[in-house]
Length: 431
Length: 160
Ligand SMILES: Cc1cc2nc3c(=O)[nH]c(=O)nc-3n(C[C@H](O)[C@H](O)[C@H](O)COP(=O)(O)O)c2cc1C
Ligand code: SF4
Ligand code: FES
Image (cartoon, rainbow over the protein chains, first blue to last red):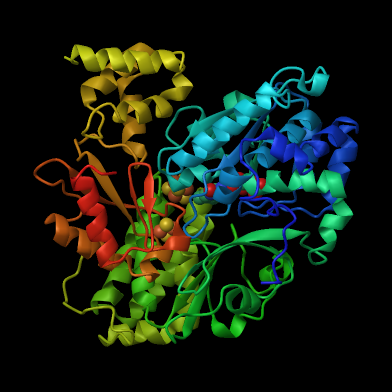
């Protein structure tokens, strides 16, 4: 397990999540003091040097995002931490919420100091009620000790954080839907522009970052952006929390440096496939990510390298699927997810997912024709290009990649053959 | 009409959130827990709309948008079985079959004694212990036949 690092996870589980004493004893809130002794521009430069990119999925450079937020001349500015963590196979933000909430609070407070923001929200999915309670206790403790609330650390700067609960909707992780939900509405994405950075919560400028993104900020200010960057690759700075799941010996969350290969992640850290089975494919970045075959496992974890191969890391979910599974049956599961989670606002996604589900079911039931493969590709292409938000744009990613790398299995299903013996071809078509 | 006892409790929740419209989702989450039936009655939704001075249709929209809300009465214990991909490849279908057999109901149904409801959920962030389920605020993972039988027995005997 020497391939893991612990820039931010070193004390996870070793200190009480809501104990200020214990957090301070391991260097907690030193970064906040450092930030308060610097100009906002200096802090932003440090974050830029770190090459930190947003860990929520879109990988936007955090330093650039904060610089833009800083330059906007409209007040008050709000800060929202995206703890919706709805991407299937992702459970890394939960580690920070449950074990290191004060690190998240410190990261958010530094952002607030830079932007002179009076108020922040942590939007935590409704499925994490325990995490909500832990974070609430940490906020209370920080307020009691003057690290949050009015006149922080004896300065004139005041910042408060409130917890908002989700109630079960994957699309609420999309930043404009997140803002809608924070305002108490149904979480349907907004038309952009205006962008959330200019016109977010209550129409005011709003900075939205992922939990993990905020959690790196104290380290970066304390140790310097260059040091953080040095752990990663030329283009992707530092470490990443990855979530290993599926047919794997060691499932869980691991902090690893960028540059590690998928093979190392799966075999050295994940311990390989149990029960003498063989790896069939890996889905990268959650249900919205591509499914890739064994031959591509030497790809390095690096936003640029992945991109050059048409891949994305997304939230850091790495789902390993063994040969007891059927590509078509797996795809059916993924399609049902998007069909259920589509918010219904735009036609390409609402109708596209419905069509995709009907088409995949045809394969699962043995009623498909060669032409149906072409139709899936066509519908996928339309969704990718015409959907209103990221949900609909990425919903067909699994389809397009599975057809690309596992077309054989789809063709077999046309002939009512399932090599994994998962699909039973009863001939009943359900939609 | 909303029964007086429930009405008072709902009013208490609304006051706790200082009558803020923005807190609608959180108010509804608490209201749903008021009875053993894990649901939001339309009469309660009307009351909330009036008190927050927002259209009833908006409250209805929010309730039906989020999957954690139900307008139909459910069992005291809602057993939510994860059906997302990581649990799927760890054979969550067997978990569904096992619960359906033990409880003698199908997915989406409630037992005649109103104790259990079976439903699906999307990923609950417990993929490291897949296949996983959630009952109320508790998560159970690495499920197999024996564990499932034990869980149902514990809830039936009220020993949770
Ligand atoms: C459908 C959809 C779901 C998303 N879910 C999440 C999520 O659960 N958590 C998250 O941090 N970002 C999520 N995102 C990305 C956010 O829109 C946004 O890019 C991110 O929170 C920005 O933070 P970052 O720059 O720190 O990554 C989602 C995007 C889409 C389109
Ligand atoms: S792409 Fe899907 S989730 Fe996004 S707005 Fe359209 S219908 Fe809603
Ligand atoms: S997929 Fe079931 S808990 Fe994540």
